[in-house]
Image (cartoon, rainbow, N blue to C red; front, side, top):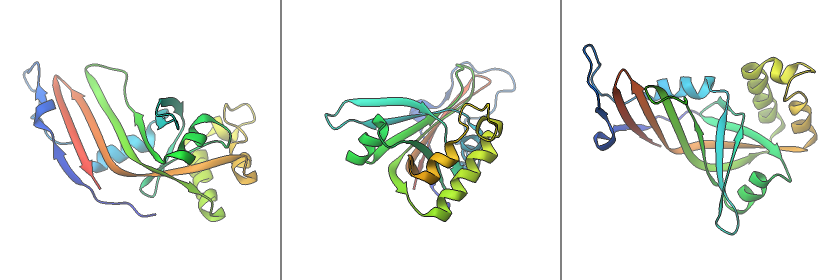
Length: 181
C-alpha cells in the first residue's frame, strides 16, 4: 500500500476566526502532512462501524498509521469484526478533547483484512514502535497482541482514506479541512 496525495480543501462555511485575537493567524487548510503526523502520534482512536441491522457501533481502539493507511486489530468474534464482515465502510476518529486548541481528525474508508504474513509483521512492528511497553512489556495493557495476530486470533484491518476531515482550533481560529483521495 502506498501513500496517496489527496486534494485539500478548506471549507469556509465551518472555518472562521470566531474570536479574533491580536496575533491570530489567518484561517488556512491543514496540510495533509500535518494530519499524517497527528495520525502517527495519536494514541486512541474511535472506530465507527455499522451493524447488519443498520445501528451504529462505536468503540475505542489503538491504531497505527503506516504506509498510507490506519491499521487496527480486533478479536474475530468482536462486534466491530462482525460488522466489518457485513459492511466494510467505517470511520476512525481521533483528536484533542479541547474546545480551544488541537486538531481532530476523521478518516473514512473501507476496512480490508490484512492476511499477508509479511504485511502483518510490518503492522506488528508499527504497533510495537508506536505503543512501546504497552505492547512489548509483560505488564503492558496490550501485551501479546502480536502473538494473537500471528496465531490468527486477532484480525488486522487496514483503512486507506477515501475522505478525511480535519477540525483545527488554534488561538481563536477554527478550520475545517477536507481531503479527498
